Structures are given as C-alpha cells and as structure tokens.
Image (cartoon, rainbow, N blue to C red; front, top):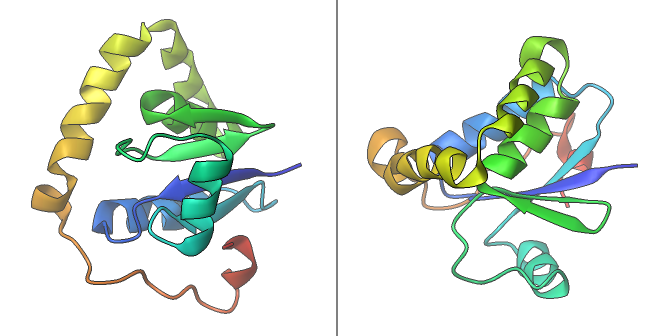
Amino acid sequence: MTAIILFDGECNFCDASVQFIIARDPKGYFRFAALQSDIGEKLKIDHQIPKKLDSIIVIEDNTVYDSSDAALVICKQLNGGWKGFYLFKIIPKPLRDSMYKVIAKNRYKWFGKKDNCRIPTPDIRNRFL
C-alpha cells in the first residue's frame, strides 16, 4: 500500500520537505506529484479537491488529508521519532490549521520560489508520478 503526496512544486520549502520525507521513508510508502503537474491536476479532479486549496495534500486509501492533517499523516509513517508528532492530532484541527496556514501563507517569502519543478534524481525518480 502507498499514499500520494501532492505538493507545491514551485516552493523551496515544499521541495525540501519532499526530500526530508524521502530520506525518512526508506520503504517508499509515499509517492509524490507536484500540484502543478498534469497528474497532480488529474488527482485533484478525481478526488474532488478544491482548486483553491493551497496546502500539502495526502491521498491515502481514497481519503484526502490536507493542511495539518496531511502533515500528521506523513509524520505517522516516517522512521524515527517523527511518529511522535502524530500525538498533535489531539489538538483541535482549527487550531492546528491556523498554525499551518501561517507557514503556508509565508512560504514563498521565507523560503523562496522556483520557476519550475525540480527534476528528481534517477535514484528517486520512481517515487514521483
């Protein structure tokens, strides 16, 4: 079984996050697609994800997670102590999402933006859709 992470392919922070996840997911549970890619657009349509949603998205078992829920679902699957972050699930989603939205809103200002998506290296290319 695998899950799909849809991420902003133009965001430096998002790209670094994908690399972080890959390094801590040696079994390859997660596959990746940029929100701006053709497959990303198709997955958004197939799963009825609103176009205006500006968040990392996880599709797992036909369930769509966004914002802080997506981040926690990711942490739950990573090697090491990252699983412990799933405990933040006890914090009400509106509060978690408000913290998440501060980072999401400022990600280009704080971390920069790319002109295009980075091409994955051959050793991880199979993880990208």
